[in-house]
Amino acid sequence: DAGVIQSPRHEVTEMGQEVTLRCKPISGHDYLFWYRQTMMRGLELLIYFNNNVPIDDSGMPEDRFSAKMPNASFSTLKIQPSEPRDSAVYFCASSPWENRASYEQYFGPGTRLTVT
Amino acid sequence: TQLLEQSPQFLSIQEGENLTVYCNSSSVFSSLQWYRQEPGEGPVLLVTVVTGGEVKKLKRLTFQFGDARKDSSLHITAAQPGDTGLYLCAGGRTYKYIFGTGTRLKVLA
View 1 (cartoon, each protein chain N blue to C red):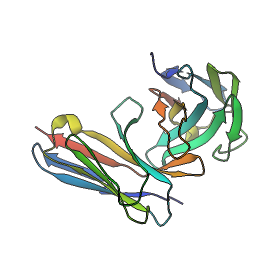
View 2: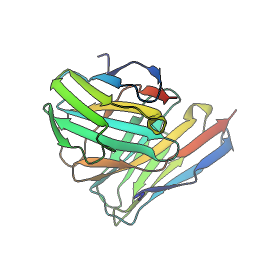
View 3: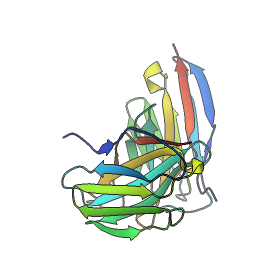
View 4: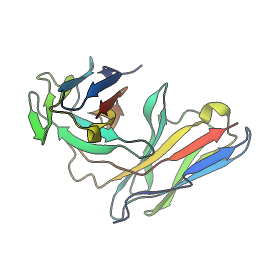
């Protein structure tokens, strides 16, 4: 299995531009998570989906952020317009969630976003 | 508000030494996980503990979940350079995991 695939691995953009991050979860996993990691705030959950439906987006920082999952094998996280404070590493993770008491998340390699 | 505090934040030790990393919270969690993250990669799950007082061993790593399910520890015996990385604990609440502040470990050869 190729694992969770994210693209691009690195993105440098100017303030005000639209940024789209992409994720392909592991086949057969019902849950998909988007996280953001910074030195100051650590790893934060932004949003997660179950069977392509957004379940909890309480971590999305503001309206400039949006996420979609049009099918079971693809998700996007969009920032429009981007700001320097959005600079971070964004991770996508997926999970089969077979056990409600606990579940294993498989993380992708991340996208390092720099907004200048 | 950071629900999970890890200590120490940074740790640099010599190969062969023992160490313990702590994960503390005032909140109760249904389960707790430990991850290791290497530079340029995503976190990788090491263990999940679900029962208060539970102890799990993974080779030289020993994980313990506190009796009240509010804290956890990770003990590494005879650390090796390959143990170098960022160690993250994550507490499970209402179907999602909240990650701790992280402990950055460096093991010198």
